[in-house]
Each structure stands twice: as structure tokens, then as C-alpha cells.
Image 1 (cartoon, one colour):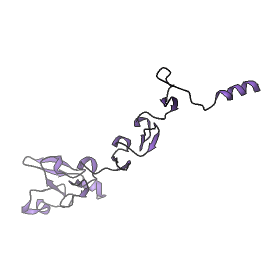
Image 2 (cartoon, one colour):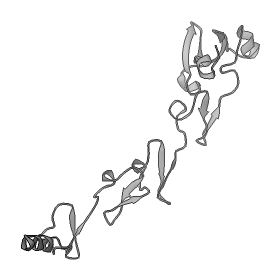
Image 3 (cartoon, one colour):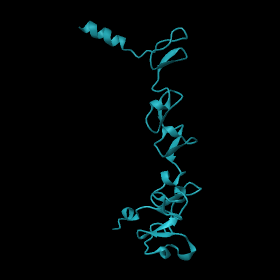
Image 4 (cartoon, one colour):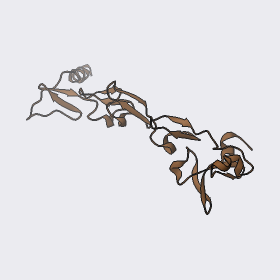
Length: 174
């Protein structure tokens, strides 16, 4: 039995096998300067989130591309770190009642969005075409791109559409 264990442990050495074009390495190994070296990855797809496959074929903390980061983050390739992405689309990237600015920041829409009203005059008076819809102001729009996050451009009247959302559900109103 001891002879069998000696042979088993003798075979489990950490020596690297020699390799060449005629003698390739085994699976998950590559030939570097005539020696087979184990690699943990061949592409970043084989690494975890916020890791990338380095030139040494090892998963390394950080990133080389946006796909190495969590959804919604981007890779700062100079520093190899994932960062929160700037907004590019109001409806995908910003919260309820927010717009996406040209600089990539979400900001509160403010104004008449979700303002309480009793009639159209409460929503901007004679200076706007805004309408009072179910007790809240609807701001005039042509399509959803005119509306902040969480709002849709809805044609309640033949001659007008307004940005509308059930604001009372968002604000806890009853």
C-alpha cells in the first residue's frame, strides 16, 4: 500500500511539461517559452463581473470593456475600473419625473408635472396648452420623448396630447 501511495504522490508533481509546435499543451494550458502554463481564462467572458482576462490569461479585478461591468455601468479604460454610466435616455436611465440632460445627468422635471389642479387654468393658464386630467396637470406633448421618466404622451383629446402618469401612486397621495 505504501508503495502505491508513493507512486501516486510522485506522479502529482508540479513540474511543467515541455511543449512545441509538434507537442502542444493540454486543455486549459498554453505554450510559453517551451513550457505548458495553466491559464484561467482565454476571454473576459470566462471571468466574473467587474473582472477581465489579462494578458497572462488570469481573471483580474477591473475592466477592459463595458461588458466587463454591471449593467448600467461603463468601463473607464484608462483606470480599468467600472463607473456609473451617465444617462442617455430619459425613460431608461432616469427616475420618475426626471429628464436626462445633454451633460448626461438626470434632473427633476419640476413645473406642472404631477401638480394638483381643478381646471386647465391651474396648469399654466392662458400661457400654455397644458390640461387638467383627473385632478393633476398634464403637460402638452407630441410624443413620449417630450415626457419625463415614468410619463407617457397620451392623447386624451382630439386636439391635444399630454404627458401623463398616475402621480398619486408615486407620491403616496390618495
